[in-house]
Length: 172
Image (cartoon, rainbow, N blue to C red; front, side, top):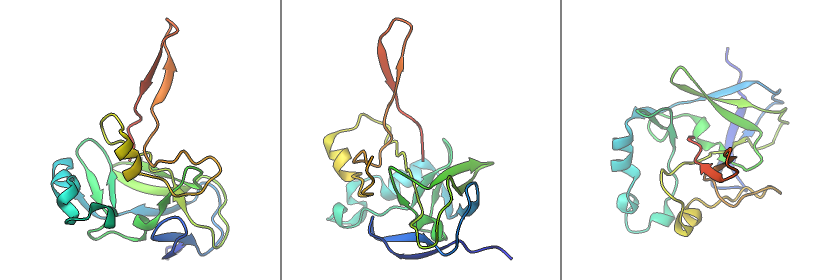
């Protein structure tokens, strides 16, 4: 019998969240992120336009999409499970692991009963980030180290010449 580690209930971060119903030890595989597997093109057709949610995009910004690879996205809103309710945090207690085309949520530290499960979404929108993008993907985690966005931050690296360049981290 599979252990149940979480329950869904209202979250102080955003909407509903997933909360630990038992103590979860570091490195525990908590849940697989499930849903319909679709292409990036289909995801863009379904959710990529502001009019995909009617007249008021801001009123319905909840998409349960997880990028697996360059061909596949899991749409958790279709046949998905409670993993889709795990909220973003800039100071997460979980991480998303992609193995053999599947997505799992693992604990990165011990999580106590009642604690909300979170992972860093590290969203990559595939373009330069505008102020409008930062607003649309604003973070509400409340962590002391909150960066204010669910978007991935460009990695900064030094070249031998001493110049600094940045790279976007590809993420879910």
